[in-house]
Amino acid sequence: MNGTDPRKRATGRRVVLWRHGQTAWNLERRFQGTTDIELTEDGVAQARRAARLLASLKPDAIISSDLQRAAATAAELAEITVLDISYDAALRETYAGVWQGLTHEEIVAQYGEQYAAWKRGEPVRRGGGELESEVADRAAPVVLHHAEKLPENGTLVVVSHGGTIRTTIGRLLGLESHHWESLGGLSNCCWSVVGEGARGWRLLEHNAGTLPEPVLGDDD
Picture (cartoon, rainbow, N blue to C red):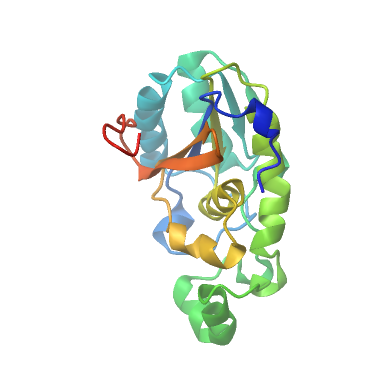
């Protein structure tokens, strides 16, 4: 499951998983994977706007993928909060072998059967690359390690990539890997929030671009 000692739960710790800003390959619908692509001017502006919102959450720590599109996004929040950024290659996007650099249409045309199997939730090494479970194996422990260092009610911001964020959330929530796709994608510079409660981690916000609102009602 999430590997956290149950006696240490219900601390109110919160993890914000923030996807990087827009890149040229995003616009071209090219599979980036571990290819190191920089932000567009619009991507920098997206990061700057989102950072102003996330700074109001008063984060205690920032960790980031070392790929430049994530690092540049994280830098906008670090500048406002005056927090150091801890970079970790384990937070990189999924390595997808020969798929990397191809457009969505090219992948479907050349690797249609493999693409369809992945969308069905089958364990697939896209382009000969990593399994989604392997991405979670490397990324989720890093997130948990830093989350466990937070003070009570503390907030960690994780700057990463859409696929890595989805698999990490799936692992933290204890979902079977074939259900991870049901979480849906993240838009550029949007984020998801998981919070730690009495029964472990729960999803509080997904693909959000505004600040979390309190849950008022029976599900609080």
